[in-house]
Image 1 (cartoon, helix red, strand yellow):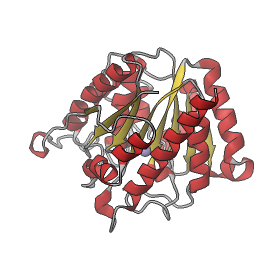
Image 2: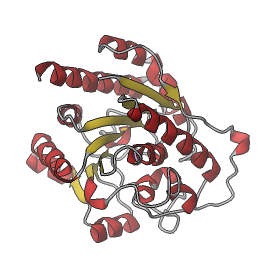
Image 3: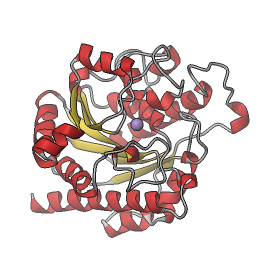
Image 4: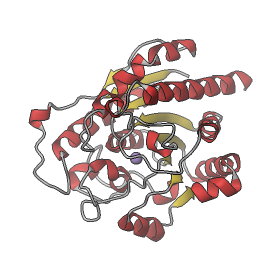
Length: 302
Ligand SMILES: [Mn+2]
């Protein structure tokens, strides 16, 4: 296991200042030390390029700060591709969730049949036509499925990056009408809070991982901090009640870590400006530590 930590210090996929400080906050919480404690070099592999505020115009209310999102996700897709090509495990810290447009585009160039586990309160399946806010952080999965503005769907090459049957939602509980329509039409697999309560996260993750391994070459975990219960994450922009608690989140990480087909992870929507102290970044660093430890254990046991 050779981790490539990539930071994505940007916020243009949503309107609240602060997610651009997410990577610095997680580093302040001890991320490089966490890497070292798990046998990795305490270094940053790369940082995605971010346009200055002045360069980001907001001309289209249904695609806010589009230039800023295109610039960063395009650069990020190159970094992710390079890391994977070097047989490294990209570990990304954001940054708002629109960065996943770049993550998926980069991975797709190396992994033809890519699987995705999307840990999130939200569907992130909006298009400019369906979006209630015009914020692109609510659109990355629609883009990956080939729906949305061409400037976004063409990053990393034209066309569909992700097949709907290669996507699994964990913790979904705040879905817009247009998103639900897409989920139903495409038959996307969803494990909502009701499913987690009744079946337990262990059973759900066993099933989710088996489902992805059947038809994909490899998969990655996109971990939105707002998938967690709001009592755990003060410092994230769009909290939703009745979320995933810590033990269940760790169960998600463990099941991912135990698979050889698990090849990347991203932690997004850390916003230190929304809280006193640095609690959400500290939690993100702790979760990354759990993940790396599980991956190490899996490797040692084999
Ligand atoms: Mn999200």
